[in-house]
Length: 380
Image (cartoon, rainbow, N blue to C red; front, side):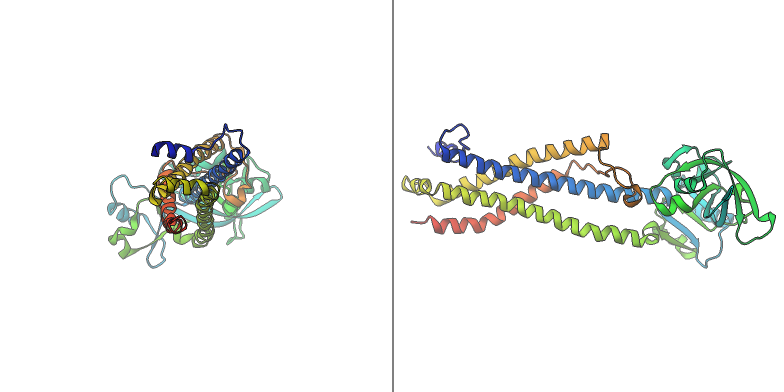
């Protein structure tokens, strides 16, 4: 008997010709539609936000390494420092020796200021600038320049550039080098001003010492290095950028919570409408002996069914949209604003394991208040 009542009161009556039943079906369908949309928006927002942060983090790590090592007293580093640091780190740890220099680069009648990043060997260069090459290749015999700089100087792979030392007015302060590759990082300050090359190409401009070392190994926990060297993480060097990311992260989290609240209250509102439509039937159920607790559990089961059905289709649709966009890149972005020219996506398949239980918990918690009000309303 109870099973028959349960089936009757959970049915959407989709095939009924009764106008009231059809209205009930449309209202229930609209509630499910809103909940499905809420789930889709939640997954899309979280995936794009995480993808954007991942793109920024990976770009900075690939272009700078995770840690920079300086001399504790701001002196330049030398090969003895390199040997000492390597001896304190595990075998296989890559440490790149870097020298930098501000120069003027000239092509025909065009001149631009640049910052040269000179490495000892590209085989031992922690920087992954080769992942950003759009033409040419990285080598120890030619230089790499950014796309914006290449466009402004009107040069391409194979072109020759004249580098001039701003600290020298003599002919000895100039050298001619060949462009071996052009990179595009989507970071304006990199693509406008940075030039990469082996340090032997810049013998006229730099000395035998180094400005800093780069590594991806977590040297912050190495107390021996801290005694003699100053270690700075890429997060510390780019505080403004990461603070900017965090400032956008908080409103997005608030937006996700707001959508979750809408999702729950949409289901509860559907329940209130359902109770108003079935009010006479509930009194009939009480008359034949069913108690309030059983009737309420029937309504709560209806809520869980709507939520489960909506989450199932919401997650499927959202992940299909993410997979399609991730493979075909339909949405284009201004690359020098978002650090990428396509919509950044981080597809996390365990999101349902967080979102669905959280929604169940919130729905059950809010329903406790709903339960007590229901008991008082239908108590004879």
